[in-house]
Length: 518
Image 1 (cartoon, rainbow, N blue to C red):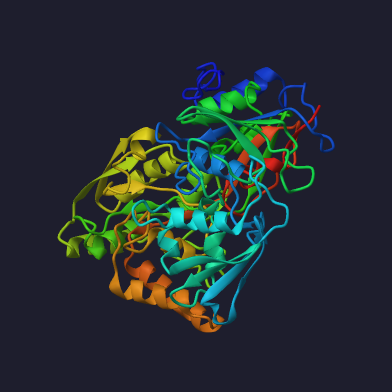
Image 2 (cartoon, one colour):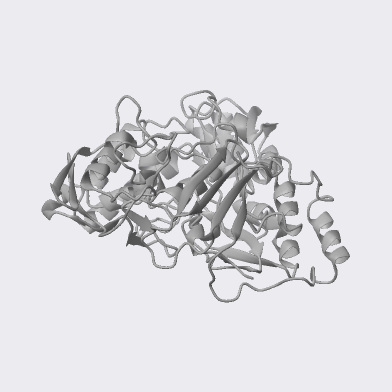
């Protein structure tokens, strides 16, 4: 295990003095604009240690490449493993472990060609057998991983050459490469064990303490020239925002993800700190289980959606750092409907009355799983009260939230990063989705999504995607109020980090890009 002070609660256990006001006071005490000792990153250089504070995590943290759930899990997965293809900062597909991934005629199969010379951390070359074993592990019916549901049309992965594998599908898969690009599809050796986490990523495993921290060292055999820049990467869990920010301001860490958007101006006032702001397709939904009362009545679900003031939510929770949403995900999908849903308290009350619940009382489970989650819950409580809905908050820590009870909460929250519509639907909106948080099982919707997934004609597929969105807009179980910008922060001596539309913080957690200035 790593020896620094455990991150849960912060390094010094200091508390910020009342959020923004306390930070502002700290900035004044430090001198106008922040400490005068700020130094710049300069040109890229090798060496040094990068210490990163990451939001959330807990005792269920894992090194499993194929089942990441929390932010620290994702950061570890991106550091250790790589998929065949990946999403870049502009949210376009790029080759990674594979030099190419191309559909065969009719898109009933896809062929991946492994990148020449790419090796695992133990020096062994990546082979087609490793790729086959990876996807058999993900789709193992006895222990399916989080990406298995998206790969339900995958019937076989076969070796078709010294450096090629073919993915055989049960139906045409025109966007199959998007599923392969998920960070939960990292390629591992055929003899992989979580106890010996070997991948092709920029960093090799050194140590791991669940719920606290993990450490990695440079993979000298990494296939990208010059990367990674730093010798060592330390990822430290923070479940509390004030502890995470204090660690950055005191220099205990070099970078943090997810600056509370209400505090961006204050944190950015420090001369020693740089903010990293990215427009994303990330979303922080409220989840309503449609298979239990009162959410089994679509009128109740729609009433809650209509009680929500999305512009006010963006202003108060995000400090304007983001845009309002109308209960649909997939913002960057070319077929996204970009719907609007305005607050209508009178209509919300009418729907509740028609449902026989004019005075509705609910319990909402909230947790600091993502910046803005608890704040959005607090705003919703106030907004819903005006429609006659009394919401009591039950705040739990992140470990409790992601315990065995996760996916069973009747009214709770979640967070998702950028995905196009069909991959996201496969992850969360189908009965066999690994994270069907709303327990939605709509026969018409399922039929349309499955047709869209197999439709090779781009125009016809787009119309089916739009039909699916209309159904989810009308009767789905998600209340999606906005798409937050991602605002992270790092010391000015850290270079190489860039904004990413993926929704993942700090250049998509691709710390291979970062260097630490002298």
